[in-house]
Length: 265
Image (tube, rainbow, N blue to C red; front, side, top):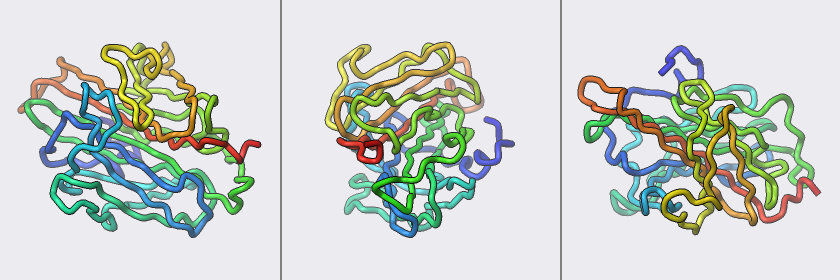
């Protein structure tokens, strides 16, 4: 893992052994579109373990935030650590999720990223995830983005968005992602696009899964408004070391697709 990457150095942390490597972690931020100085709520969820990672369900909860880094990366590159303000919304240790609040000070697209790593059951695991929200003075006619979409955070396995997650997002509008492994495009990798409430078919679900092309790209076109979990897993049996016999990587991305994209009318 390239610790020299500036944002990776801020987000990544050597962590204690994790509770459950069979589960995925993901972030959700709401609302997707806010004015500066409004509140955005960020949730850290654990689950998506049913049917070999084929659904989008909450199961258990990350036990301790000592295991996690959660950062907001602003449009100017400024990084804000959300962990100190996160609160546990579950009554029981394995119920609910963690929630934090963030107030954007300026217009622009914000990326929320999380990362954790550790050794569990003989495997070294790396998990990273992202979600986005847009701050704009006008909610009816949001400000158009300046410059390119946010770049990589430096996670070992991560998605880059090549379509805007808010502007132009809606039914029948493709979500285009590029998958990077250790900073390079990863080809022929299965990527699942799981709408909330949907359980994917066994094997390869052609309706909701894609394989990345030679440039690491793939796309999915939602048919309705929903929250969509984009997820992929990669296991490297040849990456062994002291205390672990393989290395497992996971990347998630959550896109909140509106039923009607009023900002594009």
